[in-house]
Length: 224
Image 1 (cartoon, rainbow, N blue to C red):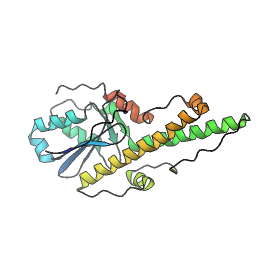
Image 2: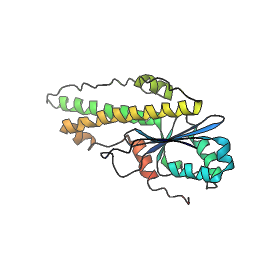
Image 3: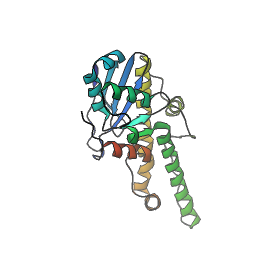
Image 4: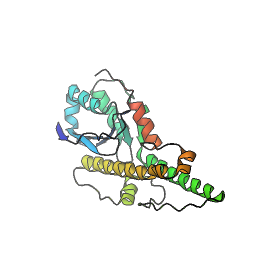
């Protein structure tokens, strides 16, 4: 099993959850990436599938790497299939992860919805007769995106090199970090405009779907 050491989770990341995970596989290899709550990669494991099938302890160690993390689902991750096989190899009960997954494109949709809410709050203030300026967003997000390829284009990220499993994993990790960044930019408006905070609540650390998955994952306990 190959391990890539990463940086530690930054001190300003909320402590109520462990982080996130990305799982991808091709015909030969499983790739597992750990991701901090602000989208930074913190560790990775690249393992031959034959090794997982032959060694339950190896499968168990990989499950241990993701059991308390929000697990990213995307059109390239096949995470449900990967987790099902990994869980079978580790001789654990199937389906334990279902409450702690989130859709990557859905998390981006949460960002778009929140920005629309911000713009609505601005419009409401103007209708009341109060003057306020437009928000000069650093990043134009365009419209909805339903695939990792579309999100890579929006984020202006290239397709990572490597084996299919590694390339797909790195693509999802890159998109997650970008989504975390545009979400933070969006939520920071609440600190600068009190009427936005009044309308939408205090700043939140993650898009709602991602956050709920992280909170659910933090409660997971497997017999490992």
